[in-house]
Length: 297
Ligand SMILES: [Zn+2]
Image 1 (cartoon, helix red, strand yellow):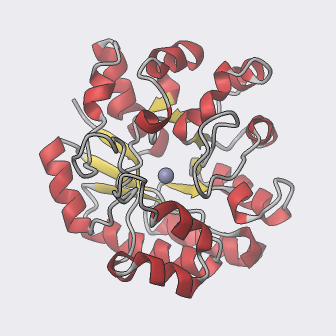
Image 2: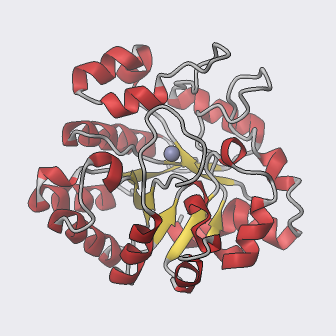
C-alpha cells in the first residue's frame, strides 16, 4: 500500500540549530510560540529533523513520500527562505518528497504572483500551510484573493490551517472562524482547499456542515489528529464527506503522543489510522491515493 504523508514540516538547518534565536532574529514570534514550546512534562512539542533524518525515518515507517508543508510565516522573507529550502529538497529527492510553497500577502500582488509561478516551475504541488488569520491578512485582501485565483489556474491545492473553535486552548492558538472556509470554497470554486487538522470537523458543524459538505473543492487532512480527536473521527468524517476527500497527514515533527515517552516519529500515527475501522479500499484512498490524485504526484 502506498503511504503518502501529506502534512510534514521541515526547516532550514540554520533554524534547526537554534530555533528560538532564529525566530527572534526574523521576527517570527508566532512560530516560536507554537514550535519551540516545552510541554508541562518537560518534553518539547516537536523535533527539528534534517531532511536526511526525515528520509531515514520514512524508510523505517514505510512512508513512500512526504509532502512538505510551508509555514504561515509573519514575514515574506521567511516564506521565500523556506520556499528556496524546499526547492533544494525537491531537487535532491524528487522521488521521496513533494512540497507546498508559502507566501505572505503583505508582499504585494506582483511579488506573490512571481513567487507562486516560480514555485510551480520548481515542481511544488500546492500552496500552504497558510493561515490568513495567523498572518494578519483579511479574507478580503485583494492580494490574498489573487493568489487563490492563481492557485486554481495552476491546479495548486491550498492547505489552510484550521483550529477548533471550541477545542483545547494551547499557547499561540489563533481563532480561525469556520464560516470563512466555506466562504473561500464558494468564492473560489476552481481552487481546491485542504483544511488541515480535519478542518476542525467543519462538515459535522451543526450550522455550517451542510454548506461545507456541498463544497466539493474542500478536502481535509488528518494532521495532529491524535492530539485533537478520538479515533472515531476517521469514520465520522469519511461518512460525512466521502473517502475521496480525506488525506492522511501527520504534522510531523510535532510530537503526537506526548504521554508515550517516545520521541516524535514519522509514521507514529499510522497505527491509529489502521485501527480506525476503515476498509482496505478506504485505507488505500486515505493513506496515499487521494494525495496522488489531488496533488498530481
Ligand atoms: Zn502543519
